[in-house]
Image (cartoon, rainbow, N blue to C red):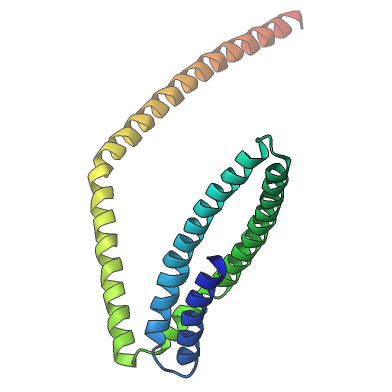
Length: 192
């Protein structure tokens, strides 16, 4: 199931990639990679894994029996399936890494297949979308701003009150210090 499915899907991707390399149907190549590598191949892998789990469970059931031959076969099938699972996991991981390394290259060839006018039109459309979203965000922030401004003003007022309280305490301490210094100065003058 995995081998035949991989040959079928990989064959389609190979043909579309070769066509795109020669400047033919680059857009179709991008769509093929998106749909086949992004959706159909993982669905194939899921189906393969479901069948594999059912087979593994059946093999395990044989290992719990009382017939020695069936127990041996069950263990053999389970061992082979574990090796197959490991091989498929490594292959899928390598496929994913290779796909991510070449991801932008697929869409770069699709982008280059458009005419200059089509590219400018897409860029203008994207710039308009960005401008609309930026305006929506600015409106949302402005709607939240009065509440935020009130909070900032309250914090500023609390900070000013705290500073005034600290200044008042510092002034009282300064007056006490000045009075103590004057008293010491008067005592020294009296002693002379």
